[in-house]
Length: 400
Image (cartoon, rainbow, N blue to C red; front, side, top):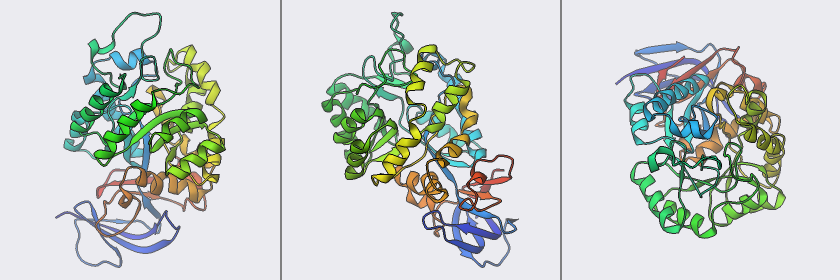
């Protein structure tokens, strides 16, 4: 058994804001005791009164998003994509994200490689490529080219699946190979070349099939959707998490609250594409689409919260834009109080992935932690300010 003792810490519970002062004993990556501990341990860290919170969760991450252009995303060798994905995951962990939910990407082999690595990596949950109708958000083929990406196989980020029977088959295949949940594209998107951004995608029958199969496996469906119409279409047919949701209205938000659906905003994706898109290779058509949703995301967070929707947090950064991940926390802070923001990054995201234990300090729960210099409820900028020292602990191992 390996043991780690954290001395003189202030353990902040994000659910209620309460702080417990004292020590924490971690045994084999699991919290064993919080309070006063004694004895000899393999490693001790004196926290000197610093604040400890549960590790952050990014509920909309793309390990395989090595570029911002759809055709480039889908045509690089998988070996390159996976090795680059490992780098992206490692960088996210060092920023404090001890768990990531990859919605549109990832696979069993990549997940197993992360687990087998000698170095700490984030907890990794994946959906596999997002499911898209022909000409939908996950169809990376430009209209002017007659081509079949990936030799007819599904892509790294998206897979074109049409019709209820093929949808059922694709969803079952996802779960056969270890998917955490199912991702569908329920509206147009910024990065896709041929679909109008505001039009709902997939028929009710196709969405219901995906939901039926996911529910049978004890899982759920996450849907890329921007407009109120697309959100209502998705949620009415059983979708559990709405990704983005920038253009929702009160009616859509009220339906989400009624059905218990979550909103996962990705504010930094649009901000980063607006500031850095051209230099990162974002095509002109995508730059124009991005302007349609750029300034609406913060309003969507407020509309959803006012209607009683639980709001999570995600980054959705592609290519070289990945290093703006922490900026996304600062952007959402403009739409939430510090307490709400911290709950989005921990409690709500942990609920979304079905692992509420990741947002607590209860005995027997994973020791995924982030140590900060100040209390984020007093100064939320400590969550994103890289100039201030932070220490990441993943499964009881001190990462940085």
